[in-house]
Length: 110
Image (tube, rainbow, N blue to C red; front, side):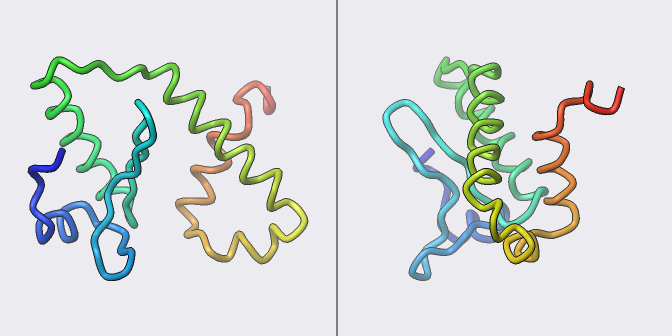
């Protein structure tokens, strides 16, 4: 994914900046975390990764991805529970809705 130009990255994917440099991904071993300040930027980035991966015959493990995201968000909620009233102010309303959708089982309301 190195063929994305830095200027395009910042604008098109709403990249997060670290020391003034746009960052759209973090990698460790065979895992990659995609980063964006907006849902739209993340969707654009995911489409780019999907196209790039298909061109390289790489497969995405959707089950592993869902499990990893759910565990990460669950761990975040657990480790920030004591001060959640402060932490939740750092999220937008849309992000809080997404957190709830991911972390609350659909069967909870049934």
